[in-house]
Image (tube, rainbow, N blue to C red; front, side):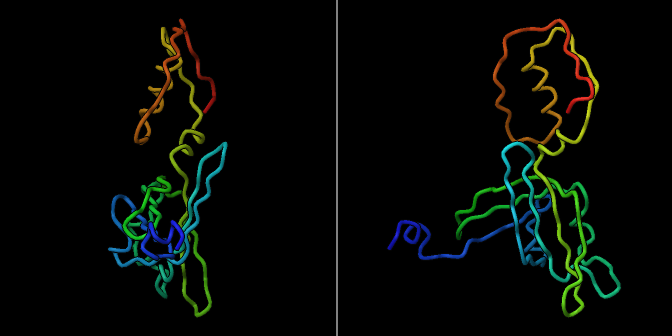
Length: 165
């Protein structure tokens, strides 16, 4: 028996739990048929998942309040009771897919919070601040769980952010 088999009690299929705005979607009666998480080196990580039969025959959403743009999504993966958070982000796309049997599925897509930082261009200036103080001020506006910012020590008389993300 290999180490993984022993560690997870001979359980071979990974488990996924998805939370939207703090609610576990499976407890809301929402099934998911496919989950994808993409982690990249120099940009925002992304996620997508498919919800089968998410629209009725008249194209009305079965879960209208759950899959809204900007809602927070947490995806946890693992085996049995040993799940870890794989990605936390926001919904930025919901697309409809017509499948065989005339069912309408939706695919929900989103990005981690780095996406928000990359999307907005700002124009701002600071007086008598260190770079690390400016970074901390900017990042505190976003829902990061923790900030680990190294003190840059050098104080600048003036820092200007001009159309940069």
